[in-house]
Length: 115
Image (cartoon, rainbow, N blue to C red; front, side, top):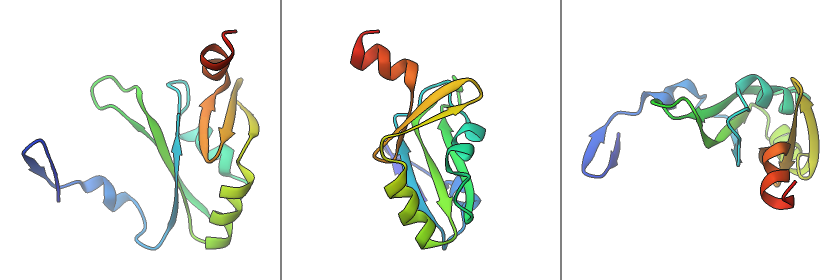
């Protein structure tokens, strides 16, 4: 059960996830990024179970974050350590993983470098 702004509702999206998984919050996801791209960024970890980029129901744009779920705590810890500062090229887009965050490089360059 969830509550916000005086509304109460049942959030069935939590049923999509295993109760015993190890989940990484992935932030700063651009609109170009999708579930497949996020999955490929973490696919080298054998116990990867699921990823999800969270999208706005009305606009279908990302809300800027997602999750990666692992069955094995060792893969979870390894992924948290290894993704920091790594570059990935997926489907022609370059993704930058920083401290567990995925960001499209074009956005990174525009915002932080003015390129």
